[in-house]
Image (cartoon, rainbow, N blue to C red; front, side, top):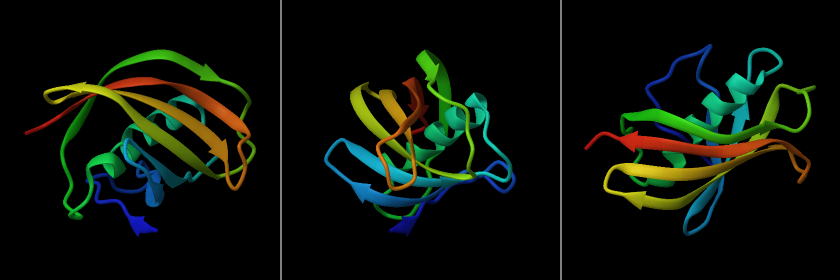
Length: 121
């Protein structure tokens, strides 16, 4: 596991570290200061996208542009979760990314959806 380089500071820094990395996806450990809402899960997923690009430890500025198919499968009961983000496709600096939020150490899905993110050059 390695920490993510993000410009966010507590209490809105949710994404903590990369747990596992694959070719087009990454599993990130996230932690919240209070029980997370759907909006907090979405922000954590957007922050987790840094794990897709973060090889050097440097942070890139990104902007969340759009959401699609966002679903809350069950209400949060814990403060820590794992988020899997996968790059579905990209066009220049635009990235279409799927995400799923899981309870730690399980495949019990909490939330899911798609994000469109623009990364600054």
